[in-house]
Length: 97
Image 1 (cartoon, one colour):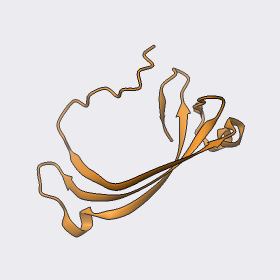
Image 2 (image 1 turned 90 degrees about the vertical axis):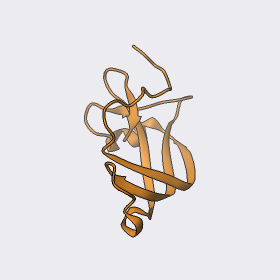
Image 3 (image 1 turned 30 degrees about the vertical axis):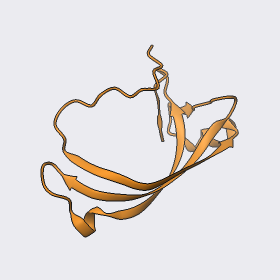
């Protein structure tokens, strides 16, 4: 099982693209038992140093585009805020929930 922290290279053609600007990542330690009921079936909290983590990620999404077409201007730029939990499946694959 590969536990690399480096994502594999993407393959295939690009169908969409975007830029993240003015990014802020804020994380809090949480008890894994607190977030476990919030995860989908088959996903357990990813634990690091005895804790799971909740992430708040805020950014300006800009220059969103589809395929080879130019950016969508006003429709392609907006502020986004994500709340994330981190999980691991039965095969040990880690991911953002």
